[in-house]
Image (cartoon, rainbow, N blue to C red):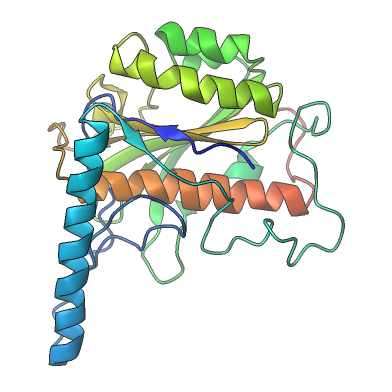
Length: 292
């Protein structure tokens, strides 16, 4: 099993706003991401209100404790096992054949495609019970310098980066914008090593993951103050950069930004997309160089 992955925010940026009147989605199983169960406009029974209040208190304390341990400039996903709300690849459930080996590009040579990572083309659905993120723009390229700069770019190149696929999304409420992607590295050992090397680089502001602008209101995702997170699975490194649409800095008490990191990295890309790659052959054109 891969070692817990580091997810760090080089600045600050909030998390997803669902649809108006809704609240952040539930955290992925096994994730250290603390979220708040928000209330709706409905009149609930006293017991239900009490439960939600207790969840709010526990979630808030969890985030405060996490920030106290990690500091403002670093944030971690403490997950050893594959996760995802619809994750089935971990135990082979639903797989009609032997699971695909994704421990190296030698064993898993098919390149990533936009169709594989963002099959819907218009939205990213993390949880069927929550509003989807609007997918604004996608990109696949072999130039890994487009995904990261500074020392992070060097780390990715040293780990054998051959390509990446990323997409920019807008949160359901429109208050946040994020770029999430998967980087194709040579093997699992290199991906794990890269994950560990990135944290001190981000903390020292010597490199960062780069957001992809996708029109008016998305420019903040390209700013150095955007919050970032990353994880690994097999020979892939998964990352996400999130920012507020209005360009304001994300505060350390912003649970929405952390929820977006969890949704994009843990639940969607690491869980759903790479789960699917393990249990089924990837679809789409073989040429990885695509852009919308």
